[in-house]
Image (cartoon, rainbow, N blue to C red; front, side, top):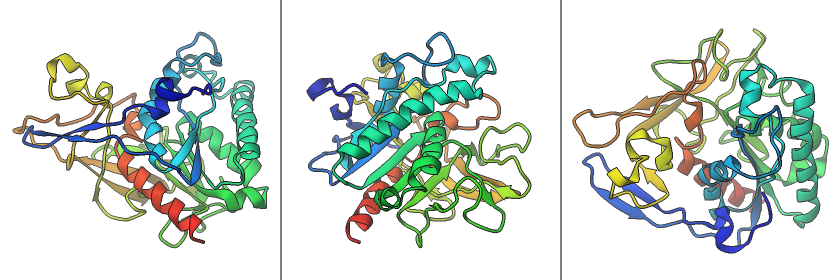
Length: 334
């Protein structure tokens, strides 16, 4: 993103939330404080550009909004750096050109240049890589191309939150396919590792033929799932943060006078469990809906095969920040 200071910098904007309880009552949650963060975060945003053509221009439009929704909350843990890049556009998906190497070369080239500038100027601080969808695609390439080939960068990479894009591991190992040496995060491998998951309804898991995420292209590999709730296991309640624009019931603030904040929390509504079976790996989302209470009861699906891709970050957003904070503390205390 352009180097914007003060109130115009969306990474410094108000992040307060309205907590909506099951009985319809609300509570205000203050914006997280960002003071003297000891580490940095390098965030690469997902496919949001509706520019005409296959690669976006370098004018920030939709990129600003998605950065605010997905990444600004990380500021309580780290200084946030967000490169504006000529990403592959929404149009390129629907024209079938998204995977053309020449388009990817442009997009990844921008991310790579920004990362090189970032590491050359952050005074040796540790960093967390954060991405979603296309952003994760480029960060995967970055880890393969830069981090795994550089002992200094491997030491400085606290973690990589690689959300909403495919990662493959061999059936009987944790490395050797997408990554040669970078392990999925676990309680035993808490830092210098990656978090990876894609969200699907528990009642509609990824189909091996039609799914875009949570699967691999080979019977010899499997898709890992890293639980964003403290790298745990089982069905765990998610600490979700949604923008009102993401929830149909709340996106018209004129009809929701109690919602005056840029984020909404719905405690107890969503739970997630990492499922790894038959080569698939995904975060299975259970909606704990009560049609008799006044609160919203669901989120809307995206395209067939995409699951709850639009909400990959929002569903466990608070958990991701908590995890990043713990990973940073662990790395700093080494």
